Image: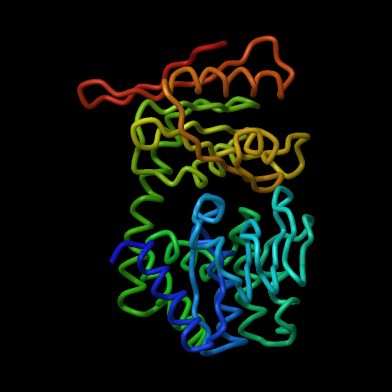
Length: 318
């Protein structure tokens, strides 16, 4: 079933039955944990997952009054919202918002009155680890892989399982398949990261989309010394996806570049998706804007290209 239809049927079920309805971010542990907290608070709740781009573009999402929204831009009508993204404007009847919070799940914990609930607090701690790129525990790493390796319905099942069984879900047969799938891509991303020379400002343009976790690639580059990262990745015929990262202690704000192109996020991680023809002209504009933001007279960047099955990383400047 297409995701759009699945979302619509979930919304209709909630409205016809009067069950609580939540909207949270589909892309990471923070959004999944926020949804799980809502299920802990309201066991009969229904969950819809979406990306920030979905929220901004979907008339279905915008037409609904949500009981709870977390880790996403406000869709227009919401009773309660929990968030920590600097670029997301408030609009809910009750807002639990703090741009200095390490993760949206922490705000959701407070919004839903779950402080003192051991499972909820444990899940929030894992969301904190993943959203601050400071994964220290096996559980956080496994949950991160479980989310990354699951499709839409798999993430919904994961939320339902976490709300009832807690971290025992991570040993579930289906969840283990998702974890293994994600671990394979993580390994490929680690191997690929070694090919990229690290600069203080590391900017990479990919001529084609590769089987990588790009946010994870940014983290790996930062661990090797990059203070600011920008990954420019093609998507579809005319699309571009930007992954922007900055070390917490640096002077850079990843959300600035992303917000220029209709995206958002926070200081350490942000992103944007946009379409333009011809794509090459858009890439040049992004590079020039980045050069201005960094205050450089010359911006060096890398192009990832492939010919006859051989991947090459070529340095250029603008």
